[in-house]
Length: 177
Length: 102
Image (cartoon, rainbow over all chains, first blue to last red):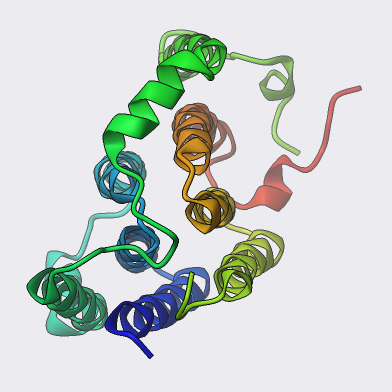
């Protein structure tokens, strides 16, 4: 079994373990920490599968932007409700599990990069230039549609997130049962 | 794909998808429902990347980019709805928003 295969299976194990921990945690912040580890593990799997652009975007957009949105929302809930217990969030038990799993992933990446050679389990790694060429030639209509979808999402999120209106939908006009 | 068979990657993607589905069905907290949706979307992206890697084509990564844009749009609108539900019902329990007007 080659080094890349070992790294792939280890990253898959980390992804499955951390995903199980995500859906079984009771605290949202603990679940989000394990979600970040799960996304990083999937990014390592992308890298070993020969998709470096997808791996980078997984880290930047999923773990970097989408999870931060979740953290912001959790922070807003805590500001509205009960006071946060700072000591409980920064204790060792909170970050030990995600830290160990992240250290495993870091060791895998260092191992693969130190070994050199081709970073792909498939026939060949697909470089970002080919992805860009394909994206803006064959799939250019999809790019336009994705841009419209994102614009609609921004407008919708702005509309739903504004505090001024009393109600944004007729579902919310009824008194609570 | 010499060392890792294509089917193994699909099995991993399937396991992640089913875990997300289990979280979606089992959890009542709407924040965890959205997180489970993210896990499921991520698992489908893994399947696309595996297919693109299997034949050495860029199409899998292109579809992953579209999935990424869709997930970003979904989570922004979903979290805005979550804030509205929390503001109105004072809870994140999905059973609290279980009735429709019509």
